[in-house]
Structure formats: structure tokens, C-alpha cells
Image 1 (tube, rainbow, N blue to C red):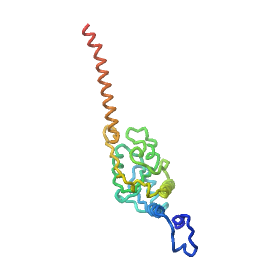
Image 2: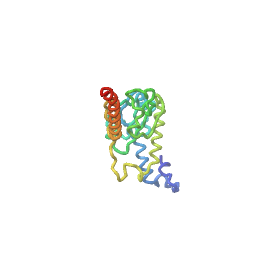
Image 3: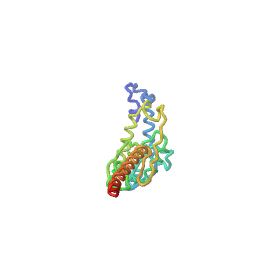
Image 4: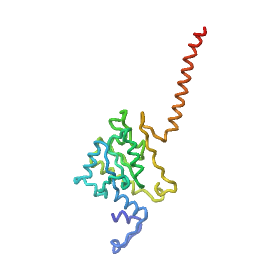
Length: 225
């Protein structure tokens, strides 16, 4: 741990190494965040069983500073999407994501969360949670083992190590807009696509009206004759 923080290119005399640390603001900031990631306590399907095993004593991801799984998004840093994402569930997932404070991260655990898995062609399944929320780490498997989840969380820590205060979105000048919550109707609708949906609907209606006029013209000519 100390070596990671002190690796800034400056040599510290041996007699001072236990008393002095030379580091950068990015390193100490990232080290503090990577070592205290609090996952949100929720699961969707069978992958959640593997996530529970990872929390238990045999694998114990508290070794990585993640022992506190919060039942509220207000106190969570990591959303582990563990299981099949249905169209009925994605509005709740987006709403929970919006309620999480920055910085926040998303882990897609398993084939279903990453791309729909064996249910991809199902009428009620979303083909990947990344269609609605940004995903930082994908973990393959159906379901992934606890070891795979640990490897994914370690990969997330490595990603955090590369971030800089100068470039992260939560320190930018522009406000971070919440993701629009999808609407569950005859199908799942993303509010960001309302303009395209309206355009397509109007064009389809115009085509149908034109076809009705074309079909009615021969009948009128025949009756006139």
C-alpha cells in the first residue's frame, strides 16, 4: 500500500521511509476511493446468489474495503447488476442509479446483465443494462463464480487508479444531468428517443394514409364507370 502511494519518482532515504510519504493528490485520492467502495445491496436473479457467496466468509470481499453493502443508493458507490434485466425492472435500476452520489460505478455481472444472456431474444428482457446506464466493468459467466466477481472488482480498482481529478466528470464545470427514467408501455421507451419515435410514428401514419387513398381510387373509378 505504501509503495503504491510513494511511487512518484522521488527517492526517500531509508531512515525516513516509515515517517515520510511523497505522493500526488491523484494517487492519495484514488487510493482512498478504491479502498472504500460500498456496493448497493440488491440483486436481480441467480447471479445475486454468487454475489452473496462473495460477501460471505469464504471469499470475503471486505478485504478490499467493500464489506459494507448499503441498502440505500444514497450511501452506495458501486451498483452490481447481478442478473437478468427485464423491461419491468430497468426503470427502477435507472432511478436507483440517479439517486447514487458521484463518484459512482456500475458492474455488469454475468451474461444477462452484459448482453441479455440466454434470454436475449425474450420479449421482456433488456439486451444489456448498458443500453440505459454506463457500465464500467463487464464480468462474463452464467453465472460468474465468486472468484470472477472478485476479479471484476479488482479490475474496477485498477480503473480507479488511472483516474485524475482534472478529467473526472464529477469535478467538471458542466452539471451532470440525470439519466431519463425509461417508460414501460407496450414496450420500453427511452425518453431520449422520443423525437425519433415521434418522427417514425408520423412517417408511418403518412404512409398508411397514402396507401388508403391509393386503394380507394380504383373503387371510385369503377363506380364512376
